[in-house]
Length: 339
Image (cartoon, rainbow, N blue to C red; front, side, top):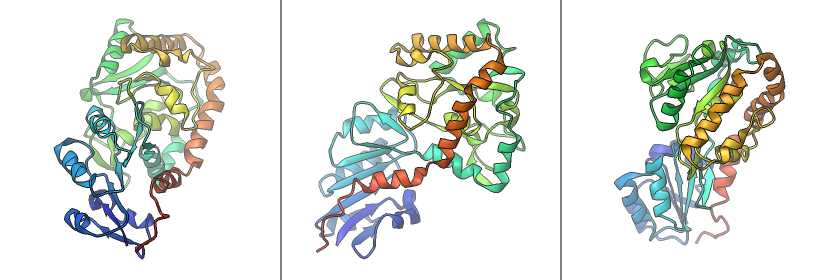
């Protein structure tokens, strides 16, 4: 039989949707997997994709595996380091973005899929009915920036220096975190239960904030030029039919559009996405924020309506789970016959 080692912490029962157990010997026992005699060995891991424990596991799997598929829902520098270190054709990385210097990767659409799964719940779906995405608002932008990072710190400073706080609803750092309605404590990284659904606080659409602001400033989690990382920060804007200006790494918008979404280059100058120097890029993006603050909201909202409606429909109508499964299964050699 062919053998597959999987991380039961990550996959649990999901593992069984990939493989016929009549053809595969499945185990989460590493020693048993190493010792098992098989003409094809596959490992699917996702508990940790960084750190000494992960590297030790990779070192043990590489000599005995024909294929290793690594899953993760985060993409920070600590996750990118092993991706760059282990440039082995045996390994495919399933990550929520793209590392620009490697080829063997699959986009893990978990943050998009998770937003849909959450708002598909009947008791939460009603939140979307309360949103007024196409109405003129009190503020031009929300800037819910969370914890301080260079891209967010620059932006917050510029907003305050220009005294734009009457046009931009600014929250910078956890001390100013705006809690979703019905919740009274925590910050964006906190696990909570929202209307019976377990989630991170940061995935809950802030209805009151969005109904008082016309557009969003998205300070994405990563600001590195070497990789693209899409999180709930952007997914919420798609779900809520909002225009956004993103403060992230170079070519973030270009990568975002490969997922089938549209951006707003018919309304603003999005060439900021091509600028290599981070400070210069963020300043150019901020100039587009200021430009939008000078325009009539009604005119802009009417112009972006086809774009935000398209993005909303694309988010909802795409079978992200099926796309991911097909891409993962394409990495497995099913043609090998069992012995």
